[in-house]
Length: 423
Image 1: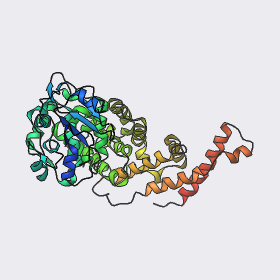
Image 2: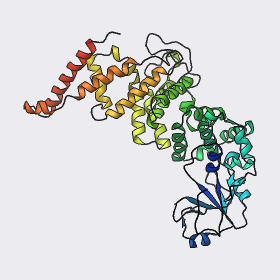
Image 3: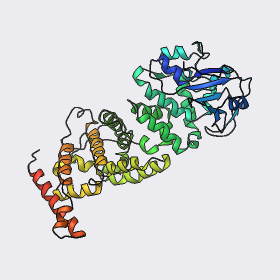
Image 4: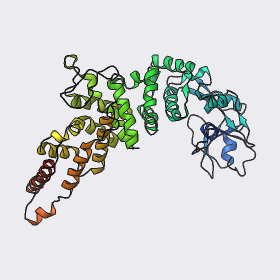
């Protein structure tokens, strides 16, 4: 436990995730502290800086770690901000821990190293159970997302959600309080889950409790929609499920990249299939274009960063062209590169290829196959990138003529490389 100097007058406990992660032998990155029996004036007099608006939270004068006065909360309004906080000096540590979401997050560590565990968090930790602390769990819709995130983070340890906790999550999802969550807050929980080793667990959990249908109905709608077995237009089969396929693609992306933008793009690449005409099934002709406004919508709702949105849009629109790379005419490849802005955004192009590879491998028969198209397109792009304007400026060309000359030379490169490919 870190030493706290000159604060011996305070009754301080380490709480929450730091205690939980210590018991799991996980590395602890953040320390959160609760101070019992103190006041705002006392904390300020000791040099703390108050930062909490809705309840008294302070930054330590030296470590800058967060210290919060022990508090209770009472539901008054709607949503996860509709609470009244009470931080009187008579609020006990047990009172403070009672308001927390899960028992494994409701433990404290004293300065003598004793674990304070009034709600059975240690036992649930040992049994790998995510269980709510009290019936007040249902008052905060954000907890649906938090439990889904913890299920994602601790999936590798074998954690499951207690049935009674899942029942409360379902009850919250059946109401309308999930809709009070801000897009930024939803994205915060989603992006943190996408960074984990098993992000698919987050979306499976939300779907199991009915929250995904409320928060991202277009993604939820993929379940039950047929998905072609392979990517060739002549081999569409009414087998498989687009939702399951999307989760498999997400899993594949984890093995290929740790970028949130890559993993988010996998979630969006087939959204347009939810708008396919029933008469056209099992084919999804044109789903690439139909998916674009759905991505714009969800990115606006969740306030997704522009760079993340940009990759998702490009993957949605052009992933089938990547899959058919060996069938494309040289002019089509050049047009594709221009639309992907390969020349100015080579890193995004590499991420595009990664998502396409994940899409290719996200099927039961393709997990271990090599995605030859990525090396083919990457090789062409690398060779074309060596062509610059300097050569043509020296020839006296100007403006549009330079671009036309560069395109002709790029076409020659594409023709040369394509002629050597036999698939």
